[in-house]
Amino acid sequence: MPYINVRGVEHYYEWMKKPSDSLVKPVMVFIHGWAGSARYWRSTANALLDQFDCLLYDLRGFGRSCGKPTIVQASESVVESQSPQAESEAIRELTYELEEYAEDLVALLDKLEIQRVYINAHSTGASIATLFFNRYPQRVERGILTCSGIFEYDEKAFAAFHKFGGYVVKFRPKWLGKIPFVDRMFMARFLHNPIPNSERQAFLQDFLEADYDAALGTIFTSVSKAQAELMPQEFAKLTVPTLLVAGEYDKIIPAEMGRQAAALSDQVEFAIIPGTAHFPMLEDAPTYLRRVQEFLQLAKLESQAG
Image (cartoon, rainbow, N blue to C red; front, side):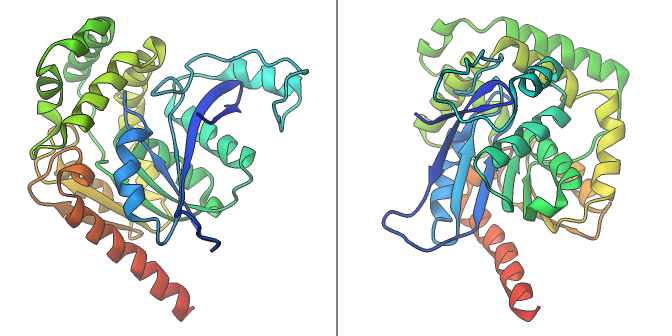
């Protein structure tokens, strides 16, 4: 499996490209959500291979990516773009703030020598992408935010969420994945339409294997007073053409939150995928892909007109 050292941490990544295709294509990067991995983006990426070379990676501490810095000896055959001192300083500064995950992404692109990309990001990954769009707009052609939005701060509700989330992260025995139908129960809150068994099982496995500190840390940084105050500002100043896709019955990030976020910028289009919840790309792939293709086709027409 391919790994790359990003800011001192080993990150899993993979390329999906059309076999025997010599065409130079634009790159689309996929960013997964909390406690997930790049695995659930594969079917979407596969459907876009005629237009893009697709780069999938696991966020720091999730999926197959490490959660902690790895000490890299100078003698090892690892290509580094930073000096050992700069690398050490970057490691010391790593936190689970979403802004840091946006910095991880730019470091990954730099390591792979990719200058400009399209991005499709989901849930917590979409918040990371939004921060990336505003900090590095020159690196992004267009963005797709799947199941994203803004929320109001509620001290009691947030405290309850953090308490429950902390319990969930702490109680994750590996044997849980061997109990029949646990994957169905685990995914019930996220779905309105069924998805394949293999997808449900992969979600559960990713959750059980997520790094403890990363899983807990991102609960506190993604659902916080600071984030509730920051994200409306981030959406309002977007300059990157963006499609925000919501699931009609999403209980995690309700569609109305997405609608409110999209209304803050004339650069954001809003679309609801009927009959889906938090994973519209899997629950109704044809409708999701059609809406994405319409957005991408518009970009092509605008480019030709220019």
